[in-house]
Length: 260
Image 1 (tube, rainbow, N blue to C red):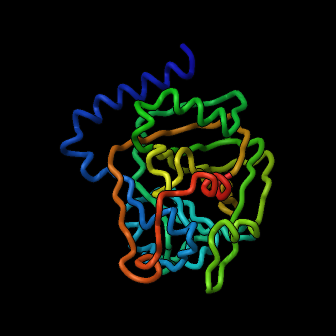
Image 2 (tube, rainbow, N blue to C red; image 1 turned 60 degrees about the horizontal axis):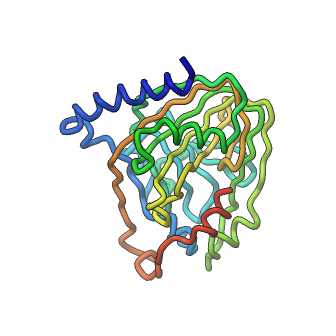
């Protein structure tokens, strides 16, 4: 039996049980998102939610920080800030975020990958086996990475510039033959501007010392866990520049540039 077939069976088996329990259990199983990707594109970087408040909605996720000070990654209930130097620090509860998404990660299916796999191959494989690309997925990858290309952004000062200008000054990192954890989400195409369509991934090394927003990778000897939900909870800022911003439909070209 192929790896893909095993994964399909595991996902669909859990899917049936998930459907049966939906009325009771799935009410609380959702992806919680604070603000919009579109607001970051417009340069709205003031944090509206503390990490203490965010952690009440999930133990797994990604995001950024007040004044866009680096990248956030969270898993197993621990939150980390990856600075523009590439160094990772534990997040303090009082720190704030202008954009983040979290969930209580409850994986439904698991897959071991022994052969080399790139970012593109990873996306194609998972898209083949998920129940529907119109739902929302949380993904965790643990193990050995032959290569990780990542980035982080420096802290900004007001007046804030649009994100496309900020990423021109981003710090780029290459990690070779490194063990660690990659976490992220897959959002449907129809959410463009709300979030990133497709896969959005962050990485943290096994020793919790470095990482970043993932732009490319090659991996083998990893374990992949997948969780899916039909529930997305959006919470918008109720003060500050967000209320005055002209937030039209997301710009697909701009999103591609900031992501990859």
